[in-house]
Structures are given as C-alpha cells and as structure tokens.
Amino acid sequence: MKHSLDELLDIVYRYYPRGVGITDDIDEELIRQTEEHARLVAARIQASKDERWHSMLRRIEGRFPRMLRNHSLHLTAGGCDGCYSFTIDLRKSTGEPLWFQISFLAPCYIVYRPCTVEIVKQASSLFAVAFRGLRFIVRRSPFDPAFVSRPDDSLRFVNIRERYVTFDLLPEEQPCAEWISRDIEMAFGCEFMPPEIGTVLVPDVTTSVRLPGEVRLYDCLFSDQRAWVKPSPSEVSGGGVDVEASSLTDSLIAVLSVLAAIYHILWTLMSDVQSGSSYRVVTTDGVLHREEVLAALTKIHMLLEAPKTARGVASKRELEAAKRELEALVASWDGHGEPPASMVAWASSFLASWPVDSVADLRVDLP
Image (cartoon, rainbow, N blue to C red):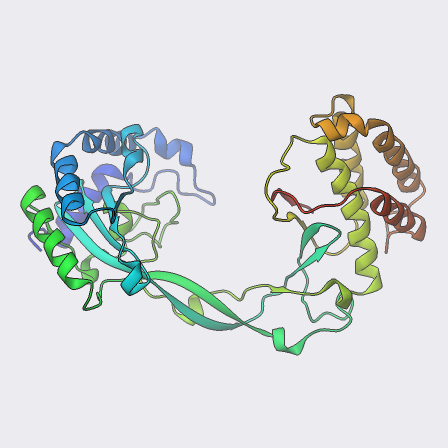
C-alpha cells in the first residue's frame, strides 16, 4: 500500500468525527451536524459528477454487455457509502455477482464476492407462530411447558445462515476481475486494499449501521453494508424457531386470541396496507397485560372517529360494538393471570365472524 495505516486513519477522521454522538445511544443528529459529516456528504455529491466514473462504466458495459449494474445512483443526493459500487453478474457460472468498489475518499479499490456460512446454534429464547392470520413473535422459550405443550426437541438447534464477503475469487471470476481492475487502476490511479488493512478496526467512530468498536476501515472508506470478516460461531446469536399453533398451551392460545382480535380491529381502521401476502407481526411476552389492552382501546377509539380504510368505514358500527364489549370485559377484569373466559369467548366470536387474511407486514412491539 502506498498509504500507511496511520495515513488511512487520518483520511477516515476527515470524514467521520471522533467521539461525537457516542454515548449509551448513538446521537445521529449530532453526528450529522459536524464538519466531518458535511465533508463526507460533499465528497459523495462531487464523486457522482466525476466523468472518470461514468466513462469507466461505459467501457465496462461495452466489454461485459447486460452484465453490469450500477449501485451508486444514490450518490447524487449525498447519501450512503464512501465509494463507487457496481457488480458484474456472473451468477450463471458462480452463483453470485462479482462486486467492485472504488473509494473516492482514499485511492483504493476492492473486488469481492458474497458467500454464506451455516452455523449451528442453540435456539434462542423466543419462537414464532402463525395464528389467526397474524405472525406472533413470543419472547419465551419454545421449550417452556407453560407456553408450548408439545415441544419439538429437533428444534433445540437451528442452522443460521450468515452472509459475508470473500476476496478469494473463483478461477472463472479471475479474468473478469483482472480486466476490470486494470481499468480501475488506470482511470483512478488507485490500488487494491488487502483485507489485512481494510479489516483493521477504527477507534472512536460510528457509521450508519456500525457501533463503536465494530467499525473497520472498509466500513468507512467503502461501505458499511457488508460483513467484511467471516463470522465465528461465538459472534452469532441463536435464532428463533417456528412452532405450530397446535403445540401451544391453552393459556397461550387464550392470550393470542385476544391479541389477534384487538389487532385485527386496529389494522382494519388504520391506513390501507392490503397489498402483499406476508403476515402482520405482533411481538408479545405471552402474557396479556391490562395496560396494553387499555392502550389499544384508546387507539381504537381515536381511529373510530375517522377510519382510514374503506373497510373500516364500512364496518364502523360492528367495530364500535366490539370495542364496547371489550371495554366492559376489561372493566371487570383485575388484570392478573390469564384473560378471563368471557374475554376469550369475545375474541373467538369476533374472529369467527371477521374476515381474517394474511396481509402486508406491519410490526408492532408490545410490552
């Protein structure tokens, strides 16, 4: 490398403020107000106008027709990355595109391809279940007999697929990489940054997706959207597992039934998100809390004043009646233990009469 590590760090600190906005939480607004960030945004906008970049893309497109994809169109607005990015689609032979990134902050470039590693981990202490047209994330162990009556021992371990990049190219990728690398070096006068340099940790800075202590030179001078080193099993947390609704305990079914009825009412009244076919997602600890039901009732009351969906307008009378019934049930409930049988019966009756479908993913975190 023509530039020493110290010189590269000096370049980074011109565009990323040291120690600014780094407390218990990351203050992104404070970071955006710094001279360093303004300098980074200006560099992105200026880079988008560089004719060397556009000329090079035309040459590569001519050499590899219909295989090039430009990933740097966002630079004109000053957002994201410290580099130009493009891919050459070699997936017919290799299964993955070949990535090229050219830093406009330092005279360096990189060539890599994505790859995947599978890591076997013990399942984490949460599980997902499809129930009444919703997808519930339950923050409980799938082996807790209070929530899952028939736990599946085969789910104690899960295979987690982690994406990262490798700089070791396949033989069939090397001719393409060599041709384009020569063009990059001639156009920009830069050199390849090896992993032993690019993966060095940068102290006292943060990026859009990296916390202090996680930021590497590659994240700053190129992009922070990649995992630059192969993850080790100790760095990967266990994943959740899917559980069949038929395996749930009666007490958890009671809780999920009440929540499903409440959130179907809410989403009927909220803005239209009827396109798509994925489940809406609700996160819960598996217990019905009086406060969360009261909070939902307050929101339902406000939305009923002016429903935001055609279905909500047409069903306003039925939804008002369901809300009044639930309010009466909550008023007589002490808020402890399982939801009362009368509340579960109300929920079951509502869900049986209400069209339940799986629609666009709308995530709601519950206490």
